[in-house]
Length: 293
Image 1 (tube, one colour):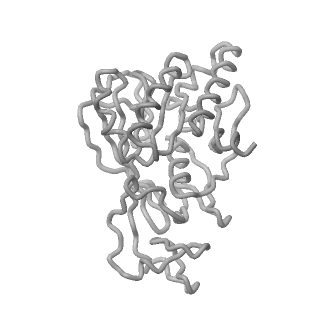
Image 2 (cartoon, rainbow, N blue to C red):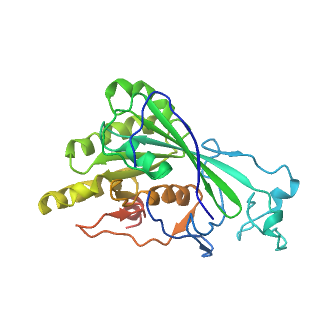
Image 3 (tube, rainbow, N blue to C red):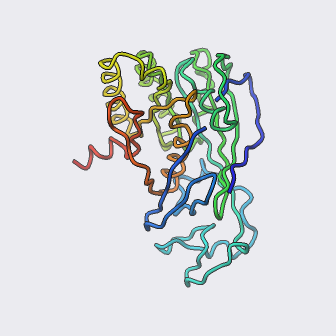
């Protein structure tokens, strides 16, 4: 099954540019869910909050409501009924789930590059400032349903802070980005998080350290310090922590797979990466681990 790129809309800005391999997801019943792009993904067990995940183009067929997951919860796109009767794939009505994702952070941290890399699989080293809000969409084709990502990137200059509600409100996930080579951009996350959470307390937070390709060449002591501070921020935010590089296609696509997994209560089988000197990938929320201890 192939990715399908969708229509683009530009609010105020020109583009910057920049995709990568993703891994595997399984649902809570331990069924295997295959990769995006080449195979299929099983259907979500439940919605996180329906205001952010709008169901569009859902089946007009009444039988759509009879599909259920292994816990006998109604699922509009699973292939079994409550009586365990198998429905042929070609007879299962398709549904599109619309997931709004906001990208927030200081200027020049790589928000637009990440978005364009994921949607268009291209990267441009030339920096072009985002003026206001930049918007792109991408559709992922799953086994019984489609995911339509509606991605909004907010310009990092403070004069655009009044447009934060456009990006944050009704978003299923908010991705907070900082530049691994500029510590002050991580410090700024505190205020970005405070304001965005005030607008949308239900959104899934993700903390992304960008420009890993440049970070890895810096002094090891600096790398260790930034990595540990990043972990502390992620713990406080109860958020996954991911180090990425759009230039080198490191941990780009996995960001959006984590959004899907957390939004639909699915399990990821991707190995976490916690070793200093490697591109950190911790998606089992640090804050949740702390609460359990």
